[in-house]
Structures are given as structure tokens and as C-alpha cells.
Amino acid sequence: MRRLRGDRVRDYTIEEKESFMREALKEAEIALAHEEIPIGCVIVKDGEIIGRGHNAREELQRAIMHAEVMAIEEANQQEESWRLLDTTLFVTIEPCVMCSGAIGLARIPQVIYGATNQKFGGAGSLYDILTDERLNHRVEVETGILETECAAIMQTFFRQGRERKKQAKLAAKTETQE
Image (cartoon, rainbow, N blue to C red; front, side, top):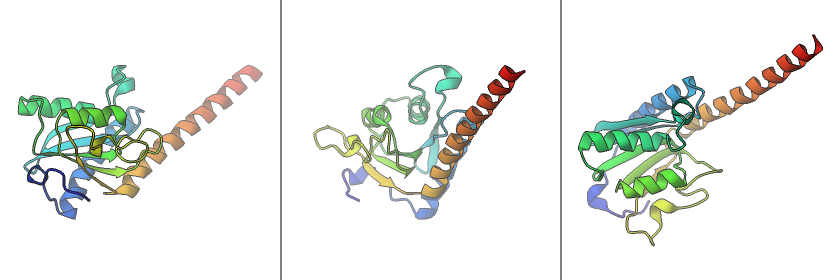
């Protein structure tokens, strides 16, 4: 891991990282309960959570209501500033391109995420927006914290979705036969 802005990046113990990621997983559980893609996020400053978020696109019918955007909004209000310097964003799944852009614009210096996002990842998988040297703000990125748990909740969501579709097809077929 390369230090980009060492004075603004906090060194967390593995226990602290796992504790904050568990808080992000709690947010993902809220999304899952609303049949949203279960991604959760917390933003931490000075060891305290100042922003929380979970995916809420379906619930709010707003395309940009991703976990990171929600957490950034709450942290901005808490800090009374658009700049979230000296913070760390913990998120269960690698930020997408939109969220990576928002993280950079909020000047968050450190992102720690659980599992990669092979289809939409903007922080290392498909794109590497957070560390792109062409941009004026770069972010230190760490991956793999509680990776198994973070990936498992996503797998559960998609497995349940496939099962719901299968049940709907069976119900429609039964209804047609009656």
C-alpha cells in the first residue's frame, strides 16, 4: 500500500478496521431488508462514525442513492463542510465509478473496502479512479477487510433474487394452467 497523503491517513489496527467494517455490514443488512443491493458504508473521523449509508435506490427511487453517497451526505452535514479531510470511508463493496468520483470530490483521503466489484468497480477492478495520478486528489485504498462476509451478503442477495424470479415463473405458470 502506497502512502499518498500520510498526514491525513490514519493507521487503524486490524481490530478497528474489522469493527468499522462490521458497522458497514449492518448498513448493508438494512439495504438487504429493503430488497436493495446490500452495500453498506460508514465514514469515520477521530475514531467516531460521522456518516452512515446503505443502498436505497429502489426505496427512494433516486439513481444516485448509493451507500457511499448517503454516507458522504450525512458526514457533510455532521462536519458542516463538503471537505471530509482526515476521514476514512469503510464500504463493504468496492466503490463504483460514480462513488469513486464523489469520494475524490469530498477529499476523503482513505478508503477501506471489503470485496471487489468486478462489474462496476471504480477503485481497482475495472477502473482505478481513486489513485489515478492525473487527478488532483488521490486516495489511499485498502481492500479485503472482512472480504468473505462482504461478498457473502451480496451472494445471498443475488441468490434470493434468482429464487424470487423462479417462484414468480412457477406461480405464473400455475395461474395460466388454472
